[in-house]
Length: 231
Image (tube, rainbow, N blue to C red; front, side, top):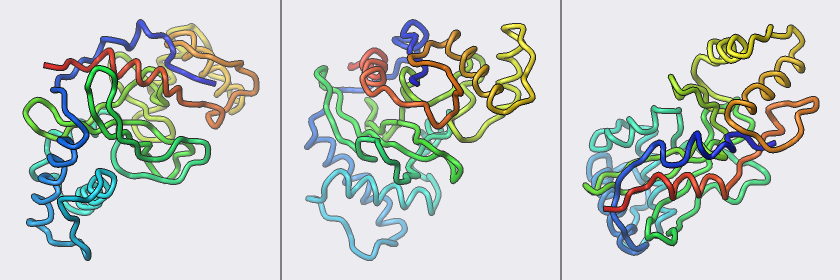
């Protein structure tokens, strides 16, 4: 079952700005950011070189930022805090690699990360890392087609993760005038049905469970393309 498929709720609604950049320019900029962290902490056994791949560099940067502070990367930290996304990756079957490096047809280059939001997560959330127009590393989380439970007031609940999920689900049941079922399977089934009616879904809701949710990579790319503003 795919959720967040109502494009009118998500496309062109959360714009962010950047500039066109080639993959090689991106790699060079990323190495410069890595150098800042390495010079500050010198915690890596094997130092990356200016020829290291983007994947190697982002993994090293991710390790530094998870184990140390986000000094020099405050904007990135603020972006991650919106829905709890980040670098924390786990192994998930059926997903097209945890990291990807790509350039869209419009010239926007970014790193895509399927990341965990907690040890109890049974599926990953997808977010991207990019350089904004000021050269700062930033993050963006596409909502359309992603496993993010979205509420217009709070942007609150990441799939399997953190935030006040109980308050969010209670509001949803109240909005539709429904009583929360005491049976856990019926509870999840009704919640997904109501959520899908509000934000769109593809798939049958029959003995529904959170493990049946799937990302839609095409929809997420549409979300990114419609919201990025290249200046």
